[in-house]
Length: 395
Image (cartoon, rainbow, N blue to C red; front, side, top):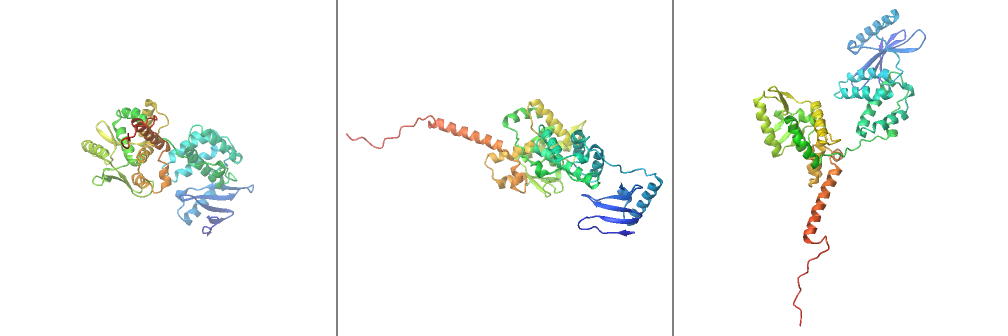
């Protein structure tokens, strides 16, 4: 038995077991996947996926290979890796592989694979899928979603094809992002004052939702950070709310400024919280006299229901972050002040949340004020005041 170290080019380990059996250890993003390769009676190369939980070291890997060899010889192997030919046949394999990574976005990946990608690519043979098929899928999705959603789906589709290539079911990956010309587009959507007048009265029917929306509109904090905010992370004297680095997108502690209106709201919530169980979370829902944490799904569903009732289209709850920063930028805040408010590390990432439409709207208001000043002075209408006499006329 010989155990080889990972090579620089192949990055694989092999355990030679004799008789053409050996184990290949393929490094993935999170851990390794083990498989036993062999040649069948016809001489065709085949492989079997091995259980990670049974392999801890070289000895356990060798014992697992002997067990599989015995099952293959007796034709009693319970789990074999059948050849994946169609796109739909490899979805379970891909989802099983992604589930081991324990990703927070696994549910979104599963919904996309089942509801979006499988209806389009499901019956296609893996070796027949081309770049043109990926472009056709992109064009159909552009009718309903933006480029950012298409980009995420394309990344997952590329990972799916890479896994199929590693398993030997495909030769090359048809996803080429350079040829697809996919760029992360800026979502130029914010809440106008007219839309706020329609939405905010409806929010009063949901007090918990109203508090979260006010906090998001005043602090530009992300919804996930708002819902996970604890009372011990509120710095009353410094007027800040702290988001720890493990929960912040920038991977460092985020300090969000709190104005007077938000501090008053937090004081009311603190008094209410002390009367209903003293929950560690700042924002909670009260039901049957008990408080429970607010989930992001409830926020999204309630917001969609309110915007639909108000007649406002294509406005996400996350757009309140863009609205907050755009309004502050419209009144003359510089880049350094916006970074202090939004906790962005770079100007390029900050620009995504400053809507050009909001700045143009504020510029039009300033121009209207200028026109009013001109009208009052009589300059705009071409009427000029008579200049005062310079001196007395000589007789």
